[in-house]
Length: 239
Ligand code: IPE
Ligand code: IPE
Ligand code: MG
Image (tube, rainbow, N blue to C red):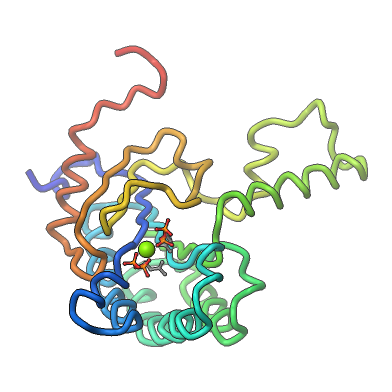
């Protein structure tokens, strides 16, 4: 059955969009062509998520660890990002999508950061769906900097260490405004998390597919939603 007809779609879907390099390699193309081809599924899946009443879609776009790729690949990825934002912002605005960038954003090339900030501003009033791009993002860096600000606040007496709760840490994280993940999809065949949203993944349902990101389409997304729908979530309780 089409999950759009039901009211039980996941509230927050995260996607580790993996496999662009292998997609290109299989066609005798350079890695940059794989990344370019990866923009189309972003458009398709965003539309499908919207249609299926997903309220938060978080895309793992560039990890902290991806900084160790070649300068050529990194520069190419950020120019593609700027191209994507330039061509899509008005469509995001029109379709009710709010764009948010999350991660260690000070490391981004200034041009990319500027484009992101503009798109965030332009779409800031939209409420249908929050599209979060995780950029220069890694959960361990995020948790470490959150712990650091917690320690500084305690040292400077803005916070009583005995009053620290889970929320105290969460509110200092880059991902503070995101709800828990309900469904995580990873394309490209690897069955790992690669430092993505470790906190919010605590009770997420995981869906792995061999499909490479540039080949991932609406039918694949629907298959993941249907799979999610069939899961029995217990959150540590009994039935
Ligand atoms: C995902 O595809 C995109 C990013 C990590 C930026 P990859 O570039 O990791 O593609 P593979 O895993 O080498 O095929
Ligand atoms: C995860 O993919 C990061 C993104 C999709 C942005 P990677 O290709 O970097 O992950 P590993 O290296 O296979 O774990
Ligand atoms: Mg990869």
